[in-house]
Image 1 (tube, rainbow, N blue to C red):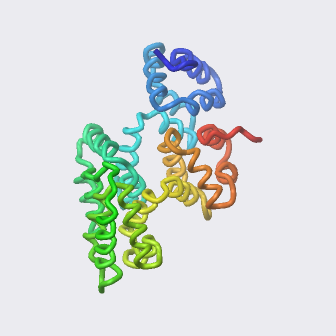
Image 2 (cartoon, rainbow, N blue to C red; image 1 turned 90 degrees about the horizontal axis):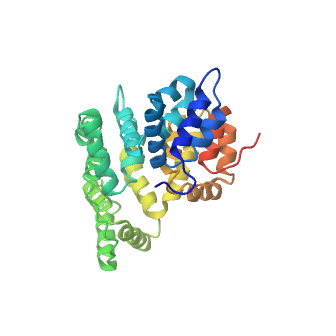
Image 3 (spheres, helix red, strand yellow; image 1 turned 180 degrees about the vertical axis):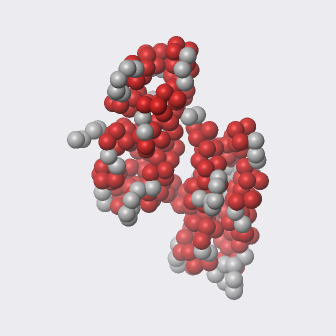
Length: 313
């Protein structure tokens, strides 16, 4: 019934024991919650409620605090609900966190975006697309709406001649004219499959002698530039893109913990091992050493567990 070695009933009892009475055994919380899959954590929560008539997330909230709490609660949510909450938070209140919208919508597959859209409506009683429309504007809004339709070709079929054609169209829409025809960039980058885009970018470089990213930086600025570059990076090397997101969350003064937590939670079951390798290649130091320098206590140890590192003092 369960994969070898996974016992949700035992996990539920161990978690209850870790939080009962005085004090909390945080190491036990980390050992269980950070070393299970999202699917397994859902099963543990069901067993916890069945056995104790209590909600695991509520208990965790009352026993932990700050970033450690945010991380554990994020991990316990079904991953789709977590994405929805991050999108909702990014648009709630004054101002919009465009970086979150980019990080999520520019990197996910059609199926993932469809699933998130349906769940968003269930959870918040609003359509994700109309929320995006009211929170963003101009070319950036059009980019997000295009991505939100989740209609990218995902066949994986490549056509070298078509790639040459598209590269020429992009050149005509940008560097070869005064001003930029944003709609052409939007159409090609939101519709073509990743393998085909790789070919298009290659053709573009052959024609101009410089990278397509350089062209984007020249032709665009602000959120639309960041969004298009995110698509470019996800096509050319997704692990590098997320490594740069982790780096950005910890670089400079202070830590953007919300961003750090989000990338770790959303990638830990997908490609975090690749992201760690990319991080070290790009920044010359291990992800663990950066986490060590920017976080502390149980929060730090929980992140270690998620990125597959052993504790060090």
